[in-house]
Amino acid sequence: MPVKTKPVQKMFYPIGEVAKMFDVNTSLIRYWENEFDIIKPKKNAKGNRLFTPQDIENLKIIYHLVKERGFTLDGAKKKLKDNKQDVINEQEIIDHLQQIKSFLMDLKKSLD
Image (cartoon, rainbow, N blue to C red; front, side, top):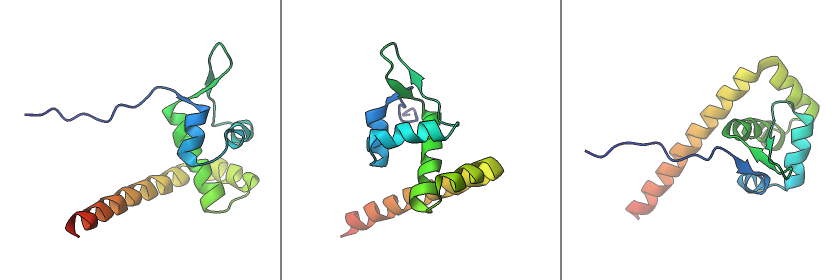
């Protein structure tokens, strides 16, 4: 019987990789780091930023508010301060819906 495992997840992601995940410039990631106190990457001896999976989740939330919903930075900060859990729940729902969509698109391709 095969063992079910979760996909391997890195402990840290360099800023270039994070920027590619969101299809943005590294400068935007650094800017959001300065603007939002929920983004706290570690820095190695060279001073390179290393983002944790939690940082990535927080960046997803910020990206959703700013890029997808059109919030200003101040509006996004206020939304996170006032009701972060609602924003997290919305993001989780969106993630699940995107996974379902991807599954259905793959299924459709296999039926064609």
